[in-house]
Image (cartoon, rainbow, N blue to C red; front, side, top):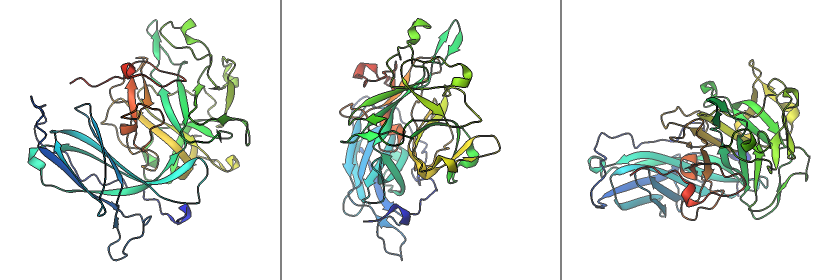
Length: 390
């Protein structure tokens, strides 16, 4: 067994050796399936025992998930004893590959599991066949309580944006009751100055009440944290009802409107605004830290949290061309491609085979689907999913 204290977190971004290739990706008229993907998965972090002369070890029996962004299919494999995988009979397409392997450790709490993760984003076509891609793994922590849904787009009222109906939904992925006491819900700022550092910069931070057993979340339970826990349909008919939300972000200085939900209170004395999320690009975090008296602030009055205190995080963006500003420890991808502001659409975790909530590979490009409408407190149906047009 290893301890997390002995692990050196690698801040470099995962090697994506499958670069964009100039080739035709026109969809074939028949399912020919003549192409292949070849990868070798290695750990260079020192997490797994390796020969010091080489500085790396091949990762055997790592789970490999492959998704085509052009076609509606998902594949899952495992690397062999040499850390290699060859997948045959693939179509010409753009593929996203996510790899993970859980690492045994006795130095984590009930909320988290330590994993090795890696990712690859590539085009597969006849002109790049025969090439083998090497994927370097990074250390990441998967949380037993995950952000399951984020509704951030809002709607319009008489051509004006209405964002008071935003919410975040959490899910207990474990088989035991956990407690959210003192957990922090945070919205990052989009600041590339913190890329590759040990900190994330946070604008808004709201904290669950309690010091131990006040805020339980049962196994398999979904809970909703509303910006305002009211029936928003009474204001905007095409909005949603959040009057049964479990929690809400309470902004007393701003004469907030509140419902019957339990209040999360603002932690940043410099920014006590409502927990309002950007409608196009943002990152939402769950943070667990031992002592909030040790909080750090920068010159803008934003809060600085250690990357290693983030137990779950999701980046969303309307375009895949946005710059990476989250450490792979938090999220190696992003959700929300093609979602429009004020559309009333949301993003939600989705097991690619079963459709169950809580699916987490530390890569939101894999873990989330986009929905036509939010589903607060319940998991979406297949008909709710926005699918790419073929």
